[in-house]
Image 1 (cartoon, rainbow, N blue to C red):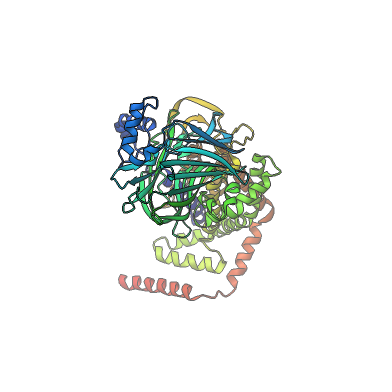
Image 2: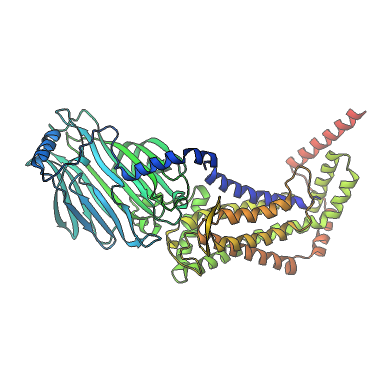
Length: 617
């Protein structure tokens, strides 16, 4: 009976890993009853949000005006006071290089379209980060004549020049011939980063410097992937604050935080990011994130609504802020170029040792392999090398199982001899383990050692930009799920399609668990039913990974095949039960030295046994 303890501990460790992952992603999943009760209301709210602009909650909005109506224009200019000096115009100015195309509107002087030139979505549409009113940027301030204005409602005058080979766009909201608020955009060739300067001139007596000037930036993440729920798992507001500390708002629910000393804000939309960085840091900022995805739907257009509000300080009564816009891929090779800003920290490598493994080992290692191998083959090669590196751990685990198997007859004798005295049975069992040099916990240690690699790769494959839209065999995108059949209906937690790689991975893990747990698994009191777990785990993998990156399922399939092969080699060509038995018998003859802990435990058990005997008398 004791032989199965090693296997049980290993499987329990495996179950715990899956339990943690499932808990992380499904703890806030609404129940069917909640979805049914709120569905109508949620659809109404989602439709309203998808069509509305992103207004400031505290500022009265300036209505759209007919620029051909001189009376309407005059009324508008009267409402905004001194800034009515700028003639209203609906002109759009385009800034573009080989990588990025930006449209900047005269109204608000803000970016109204940001398009990636070298990327497209799963359905061949260009990747837009800003498009059709999903974003809003402006400064909220009060004038000396007590008008509350927001620059997104003001009109700017554009001027395009060249500077050292860079294209410079100056947008000025004028309050007089030499009085203005300026947004200055400078775009370099072949660069996703755009320098962005906010400055004012001659506004000392026009802007009320005793009241806050708040920068407000909102953006709704545009859907780019096949599965909006899957994409939403990796859509997140990330920020750098307090001298390099990286923090995040909630992935699964609405969230709000107030932070100090913020260096940059990243509105990450899975594989693409919109980032605003401030060279002098924002002294404080209020950050918000609202989840717009309630369930999987092909009609859902947006993932999350992000918002940020940060006060800007005046210097000598004027504004002078040096910033950067980044619209581009969440790709470590690209973001590493901006080492001074530390934008690569916005990539979700994972926390602790898991992030360290991804950042400094798996990411560069896979980039190296994929530089000369097909992307799917690179995954297979990486899997083989990782499993070979972990083979000593596999060997120790299997050796521990073999030792427990050899001790099985003696453990059975102790069980029969002390069947009415559990404490004595445990005491004698520990003595036998000690003499034989066997640790009943040695089977758990290999599972724990593999856990960092398991979780690191769980984060690597869904977030590695190198895998995006890279095909292998029947999978057209290794960063998304593969499809071999579409279902005419949707299965809860599974989806409306069949992915083949998760099926192969589930079959492989079933055979692996069959080898490690055996066919005859007696049920021990108080322990899980191992046959049930053996069938449950592959089923969990089948459902859980059906909507995950096919590259991840490919890794687990190949990994389990290799593990099975390694175990067969160890069993048939390396380990010899007779030699193990002989070694155990030799170990029993040797005097066993006790450390302080073992001595203390033995004394405690002997005292407990003695007290039990005394109590019986």
